[in-house]
Image (cartoon, rainbow, N blue to C red; front, side, top):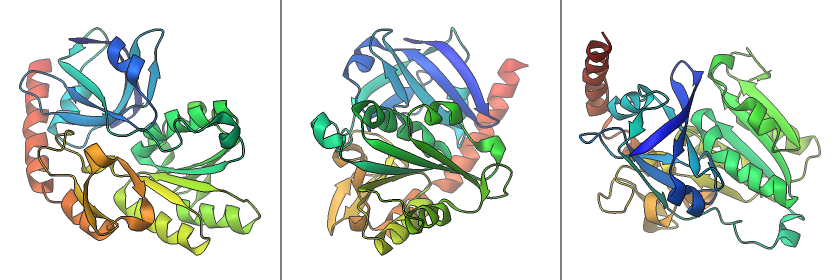
Length: 287
């Protein structure tokens, strides 16, 4: 059992949890993910590592309610326990292990959309502490859905915020902000985009115009997280890859985004039905 030592509501549908998991915290690296289960009969939910504290023996996860299993996780409170926190799984970010002197020469731009802010945080933190230049663009539909803004500001040189409705930062898409920065004289050696699949697709189209290398994370495709179910198969560079074991990060220009988006939508009807039943069950148990 893995005790929840801290819970913070970040938005109406997103919560942050700090969980006791000493072995996981000791081994975790930026870019990796965990498999979490709320209860014995619960589904295995892959969640990227938002943060880890080796001294305290804790890992931080951020969960957005999108279905029954994520709703059940978010219904837990401080003092409650998760049945499973397995990991770390997947490959760490490609910059992990690069000599610090090399990282100091790099200029990174991160583009984080929605919940993608959570996995961007440990990567930006690692690079910032290593001496690399780090800029971050955060995008959300509204100001209410922006998360971890203060934490992100502490691990970068410049933070840019975009909202679809203009309720905070600049009104518009993250791709427009990215173009504005580059055409305004900003120079970057590497871009990283993490967020909705459609966002990453259009970020790739934007960075291609500037010949800027781009890495994307396909963590939203994962189901089982061990390569056994095949749900996260994706074509990368003409070859079949598994987001969970070969990734979750890949060269964006090699990813077949159309295929990935089709695969992501396959189980949407079942997910909606299951979430409705879960919501009723939680309400009854709390009532």
